[in-house]
Image (cartoon, rainbow, N blue to C red; front, side, top):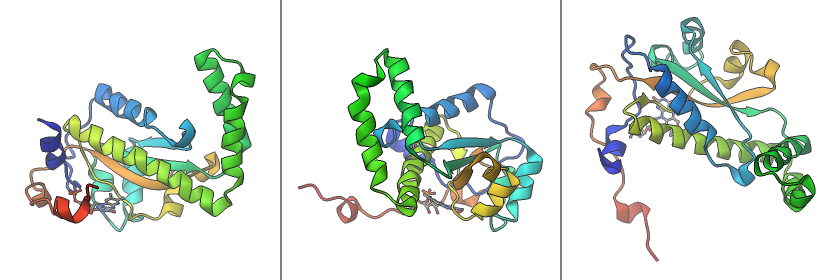
Length: 209
Ligand SMILES: Cc1cc2nc3c(=O)[nH]c(=O)nc-3n(C[C@H](O)[C@H](O)[C@H](O)COP(=O)(O)O)c2cc1C
């Protein structure tokens, strides 16, 4: 499939075939696609929780407006933000750059200072919004990579974050859920698979200047 056919093929899958599971190799590819997602400064303020346990998935349905894709998918991806993000996270990242690129920390002190200055200009609410924006980049990346691999997915915002954080022990790990992506394979019964895509015309959404 060319990329446009692939993007037309994907849709927000409501009914997953519960008998079809994603192979481990493909799951690892999706995890790697998540890891390779770009972020502001490269800071990666996120964590992907991959819920495989049927019991856990089932327990989340009632906290997701009873959407069946939460339990019927092969794996449930929960994209989460750290509940605190501080200068020490910048220090960890700067050390990783230095180690990876065989540079001294002093060489990249300016970059560290710039990131710390950027963070210092945000209060907690602004930081949360900024982190959530980064996480939505990962969400988009995952959906496209899924489609390219002919794996179905459904972005889900309709869930009770606090309940997810409790039931998946995210709060204890200093994370909070932001958005969810059930992944797997569409069931033949899903009427949305054949529904025409509803998108505005290019003229309506794009202006070339
Ligand atoms: C951020 C985001 C959150 C969404 N939340 C839900 C959701 O909770 N439940 C659901 O069934 N679909 C959800 N959707 C799917 C959208 O309704 C769907 O992507 C949109 O109608 C376009 O249709 P398509 O993805 O099938 O092309 C969400 C989509 C996005 C991008």
